Length: 141
Ligand SMILES: [Zn+2]
Image 1 (cartoon, protein in one colour):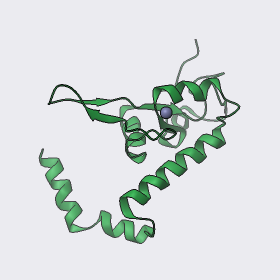
Image 2: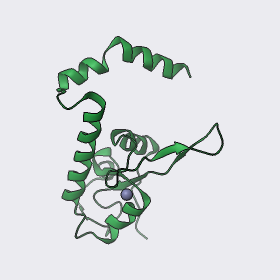
Image 3: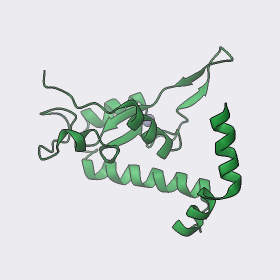
Image 4: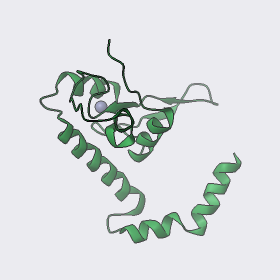
């Protein structure tokens, strides 16, 4: 079996966060409460847009392993769609998956900062004292 270039945990988390912890195709939340009060459930899948291994779905042999495992080659999906994109490659081309990923990130960005937000607005919000305070609160937990 050919060697797979897997995403790191950090990259998987980044893909989930950029998708707003929602599956990029079906939009269901990927995190939720566990029956144990101190735990949560996480069901997301970090999927490769271009093949993870030689002769995989959506081949692109020119990709180096570092490019293959980069967030730019990943999309956050549910387990059903993770399987579907690999068996129905005619419908889910690399270009189509990039469009889906981009739409999802735009949708989440709009939810976070509003539809009229520019990158300057976003930068202002990210650098605001309120968010710095929230970040400090989060770090203290
Ligand atoms: Zn799905």
